[in-house]
Length: 293
Ligand code: PAF
Image (tube, rainbow, N blue to C red; front, side, top):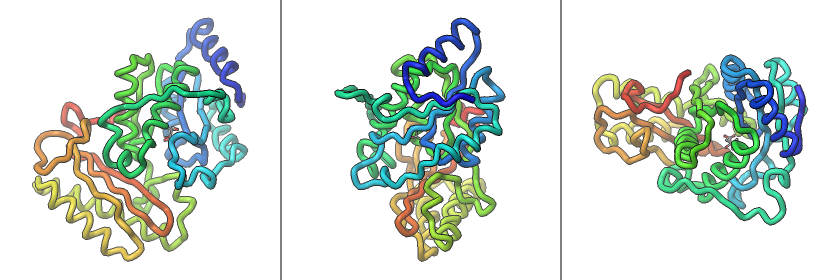
C-alpha cells in the first residue's frame, strides 16, 4: 500500500493502471476517521475492482465557517492501519494545496438537489462536496466510486454531478452501517458524550417505527413525520433540526406517499453534535436509489 500526497503522482499512477495494465479502479472518497461504514465501501471496491484507492482529505470547502472543520478528527496513521487489513493499493492523502492550488477559483454547483435538507441547513456544503469530488474524479478517473447511504442527499448530488458532467465513473451506493443500538456509524459519533450516544439511538428507533407504520398502510407524509418527531422529542437529550419526507430521487416534499420510493431524512443535535440519518421506503420502485452491485 502506497500513500500518495501529490496530485501529479496520483494521476500518473492511475493513468498507468488504466492504460498500461488495463485494470479497473475503485475509488472510495473519505475524510478519514474511518469506521466500519467506510470499510464496507472498501470491501465492496476490493470485490469489484482490480485496484482500490482510498482518498483521505478533510475538505475545507464543505464546512461553513462556524462548523467543525478545525476539530474534525484526523489520524492518518490510524486510518492507514485500518486500511492495511483490506489490501488497499493506494491511499491518496493530499495536503489542501494539492486539491486547491493557489488562486483556485472554479466551483461546481448541483442546482436544486443541493438546496434543501442538508443544503438548507449547511449553505455551501454541497458546492464544496461537488467541487472536491470533481477534482478527485478528474485526478483518479476511477471506474467506480463508492458512497454510503447515510449521506442520502450527497448520493443524489453525486449521481447528478456524474451524469450532468459526463464523468466516466459509476457511482455505487451501499447501505448504512449501524451499531447494535441502531445508531448510524459516523465519524462525528466520536464527539458524542456516552449519554448522548445512548440517546442518539432514538433516531433509528423513530425511523423504524415510521417504516412499520408505512408497512401497515400509512401513506400520509405529515403523519409519518409527526410520528417520528414525537418519538425523538420523547428523548430529552435530542434537539430536532428537521424531519422530512421526500421523493427519494428528486427530493420533492411528499404529503401523500404513492408508489414512488420515499426518503425519510432526519437531522438532530445531541449536545453539540449534529447527526443525520435516513431510511428509504419502497426501495423496489423502479427509481429507488440504492444501487446494490
Ligand atoms: O462523505 C464524505 O466523507 C465527504 O463528503 C466526501 C464525499 C469524502 C467529500 O469530501
